[in-house]
Length: 168
Image (cartoon, rainbow, N blue to C red; front, side, top):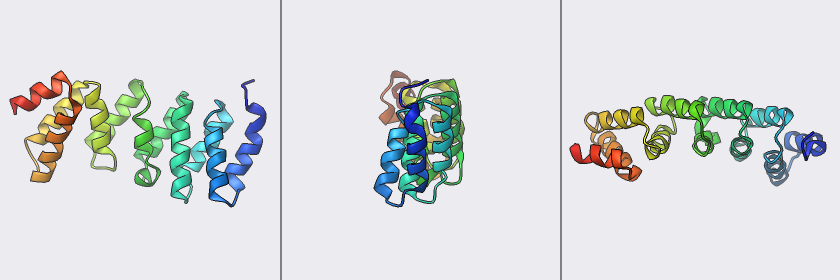
C-alpha cells in the first residue's frame, strides 16, 4: 500500500462532490500527491469537468503522478476538445519520455491549442523533427505564422535552432 491510500476515498469524494471550488481544488491537489490507480481515474474524470479551474488542477495533478496511466490521460486531455480550458499541454510539457515527445510532436504538427508550446518544448530538447517542422513554417505561411516560427527558433536558444535560424 502507498502512503496516503487511506485518504483516497475521502479526497475522491471531496473532489467529486464538494460545492466550494476551493475545497474541490485542494482535494485535487492532494490527490496529485498519491500515486494510485483510483486517483488517476478520478483525476482523469475531473479533467473533463465543466469548471475550467478544476479541470486545470486535475491536469496539473496528473502530471505530478507520472505513471503510464496518468501520462495517457494527460495526453488525451491535451489532444481533446477542451485542451485550451484544461491547459493540459502546459502540464504535459513538464513530463519526460518518448510517449510525451511523440504526443507533443503530433500536437505541434496540428493547428490545435498548444501547438507552439509543444514545439517550444521539443526545440528546447533539440528534437530534429520539430526543428525541421518549425524551419519549414518559417519559410511559408502568413507573415504572422512565419514570425511565430522564427520566434520559436530564436527562443529555443540551442545550437541547432540558432544555426538553422542563421541559415534562413
